[in-house]
Image 1 (cartoon, helix red, strand yellow):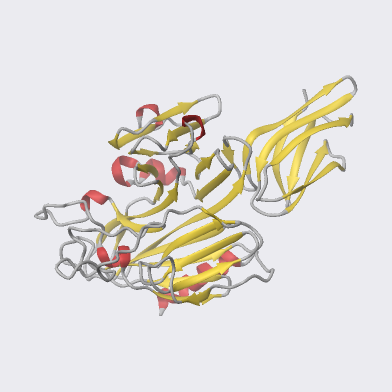
Image 2 (cartoon, one colour):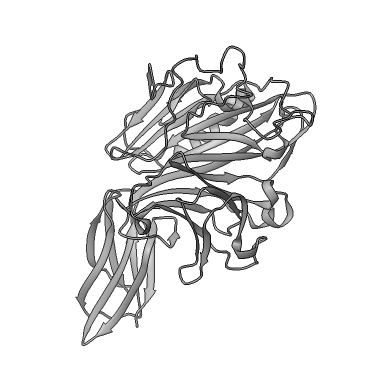
Length: 423
């Protein structure tokens, strides 16, 4: 009961700012062929969670555009493994979408197991969850891992999916609880399989971006640690990001000093963003899994790329728990983003210059809710207003009468989306 109350308090804190009515999570008989679940939608986003497959979110759609990769349900066996392999020790059926595991992966199985780091713990990965709506949120409580081959016996996951009403954002708060009689040390490993198409021309294929460190140097040469395959990843100092191509299968890890990771698809201009809390003190003093990674990206030749976020490793006493929250969102942009802020995504930073008695203001952004973007010069009133929506890029290209002031700001939905000095 105590854990349910804690999770309910998380729901309340995450959804407190959203008061407008919206379709709540509703039970359905089937989600993508993977059994019963819950769905919710409005005129921006659709979400679907499969209750009987680990409480996974299998759909997260922007205006009908599916963002997540969905695995093909097995046709010849009931979900849960073949009769002679109920724990999927040899044959793993991947449902896709969101999955959450304990980390590090290298410690999953017991030392005498011939497949020490694969497949995932079965109850945590695809066990039947008990899911129930809580207002604009969905609480999914999973079973306790009891499979003897895995070291994490006694762990249990619960997920709270909280939709931020009127926006494209959804926060996924995962709580890992140790129900065993002995202490355990694990991190939370949040991974989302995002669909990518390999049919576009090489210069039009999706890429994954995350911020280069601005202060203390990365733990890794070039800002990324190559973990598997032959991934293509490089720093772009001019834009302040690391960029990984999705057409080169492989996996890399990173340790950005700001909490965001995104996939950009230039074919239709969609950006899928994951935000998370970056704790500089934890990064400096605590151990992170997989060699010190806070994020990882894995390009899979089956047609998806995993965007992964990891918590620090935590010592869990019997009955102890830890929670990590990651916020997903999506929007359309007219180019490759270079930054993610509290109020939106930056493609081309705001710029302003005076020229022949006129004021030229330019920039390009993506936003995650509908609203009005307002341009102000100095401390004066708005000199321009532009309707903005997540379904189209917010492109600023203004030629205005000059106004007093030495800076411009772009305000959106009660916050500052961008600012710039006037040249």
